Image (cartoon, rainbow, N blue to C red; front, side, top):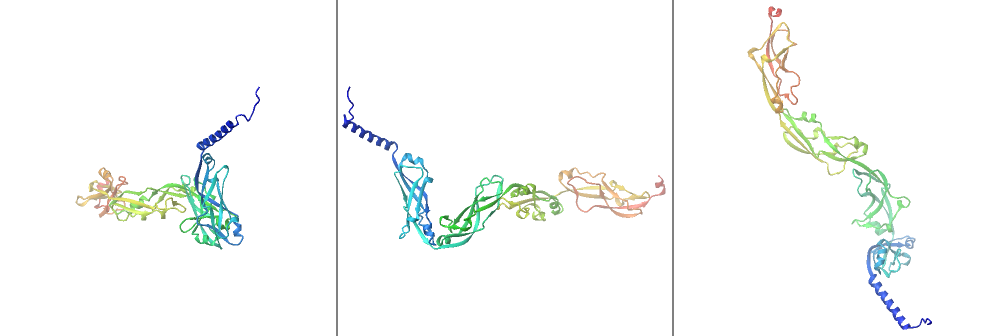
Length: 428
């Protein structure tokens, strides 16, 4: 039996190993090659700020060096194992060059090894050291997001209406406004919410809070109480009888309508639920002596109940359209002999000198006037007359004639002569 010799054909074995190694390198570089990719807008975290602040001065980053681009060189497969959030850029003020105020930036990537290289551009943070200044700024509350359908945001009140801010004098002097920002996304209930404090300069560029100290927020979070209001479409209405009374004689109200006919308002749920309509006062409608079709634009806001407001502050204009038309008229003549005599004393006779007649003028809709019949309804009331003589008496009509029809002009009258009956007539 041949004895195994590990050194037999040694040269061939070395060649095979070298070939395998080269083949493995080839396969790796073809299947998973090295690539270089940029990751932009990576914020730099400042470490050990007390190195400067303990000297009673402040500092801030200048020349936009607090945001860097990081170039990562690694195999393609590794780029799937991290996101930009895993890239940590830090600048340790303990390593600041006092002659240039430059601090080197260190880059690490969480959870990833075997990175070929990482480089920050720029490679240093530039620090400006200056005196500390303090100032007080009012706080404006702003909201982001959309509430639940059927609700709008009412009052918003922050637990701090102003803030004392301390920091480098250059930054303090740049501050133009301070905002407490809350999200109302999907809200329907009034609640206090934590708010994010944001600071802006005159150009509305945001100033980083990293180099500022807000005294009130050292021990207490900024909170904003957000009031949520229900919304509802409420119809507009008016007093029809008052409008009719305003129209000149001989004319009638044909139409009166609002555009839009309803408005979207908001308020406390229980108060909004009780609100059925919003009345517009008659004097605001612009009726006057106008005839025909007229349009008048009014501001609806003065007529909203207390604690009720428009959802859209610009939707306060309402167009009132009024159509006033002349009323049709019809005259009906009644002969004196067709007039009923009521409450005539038994000892009196009635005579109508010269065979008189009276004419009633009615006004209303043409359809009603065409079918109007007053036969048997016209009468004289003689209850107050007991002595003979010649009198001029008003001619009356019984009750309501037709809906929408009324007497136009003065009530007609007629001359009558009352005489004593002969005794024979009374006995009969």
